[in-house]
Amino acid sequence: MSGIARILKYTAVATALAACSISTASASDKITIMVGGINKIIYLPAKLTENLGYFKAEGLDVVLLSEPAGVNAENEMLAGAVQGVVGFYDHSIDLQAKGKEVESVVQFSQVPGEVEVIAANQEGKIKSPADFKGKTLGVTGLGSSTDFLTQYMAAVSGLKHGDYTILPVGAGNTFIASIQQNRIDAGMTTDPTVTQLVASGQGKVLVDMRTADATKKALGGLYPAASLYMPNAWINSHKAETQKLASAFVKTMKYIHTHTAEEIAAQMPKDYYAGNKDLYVSALKASMPMFTADGRMPEDGPPTVLKVLSTFKPQVKAAHIDLSKTYTTAFVDAANK
Image (cartoon, rainbow, N blue to C red; front, side, top):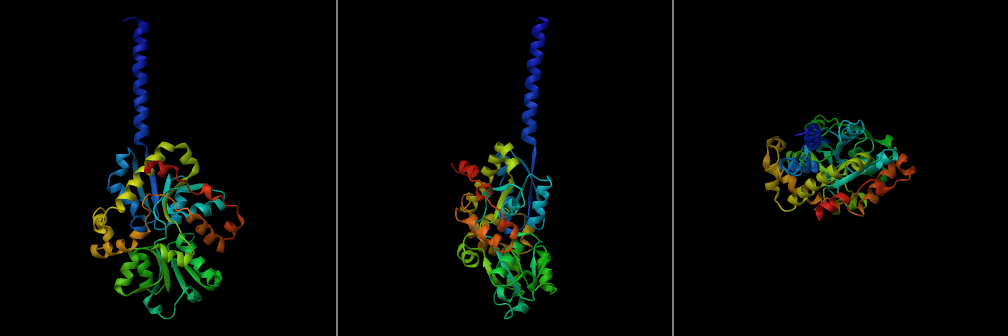
């Protein structure tokens, strides 16, 4: 073999090895997603997708992290610590009003799945949001979707923000403790916490937004909530990865609609049951109607969310919101073909 031929051979081998290295690195790059409370049933599709092996089936290395409130998860994304958030779609609109462009890639739910729960000792005293005056209301975090929805319900009932007190109390055990310790008179939370409070007699449901009909009654329309949202810039520069994420999650949404609550619960970590699997299954059954069948954004949903936010957020009301930039159906459409 001549010297030139040998050089060409080694160059070709080196190029092939480099290409293989690049391909391997690309395939093994981690995508980190922050979940606004990973054990909440509203965000169940995140952990379920992981446990069903759908991320790996798409060739993805996805790391799921958890923050107690969606607003904390949002902040992690804006800081560049994570690539995406499993949280409420309404943050996409709120952030656009602040000059930040993020969009929902997969829509997990068509309604919030949130419930306004009153402490048992407030029964008869708080009969509607109009009775929030002078009360302390629990939310997961300031600037969270529970904060948004609480302020909206108070505003349309004729109350000003100073008429009541908003207290961030997190979710799950910290929310329950806040009820038990009389730190809050009422608060907004999700399952399985709602079912736990009602079953124990410590809480009563005031406003239920776990079904389409109840949500339309409370908010005037569908309110698409739990979603995978990501910065538009990252999506545009990582379309292949985004498509794989969407395909994995769409498989999960179809799984949810073709399996029972018992079968779905069996796929979840046992610590999510909080020591009572039957209660968890019961909570899951109550929340199942909120999930979309295919990951698509309901067409009439975004205008309702914009209406709700602009009711009490002057910044959103004053902004020229382009709803088409707050979500995309391109990836779920491709996944559903």
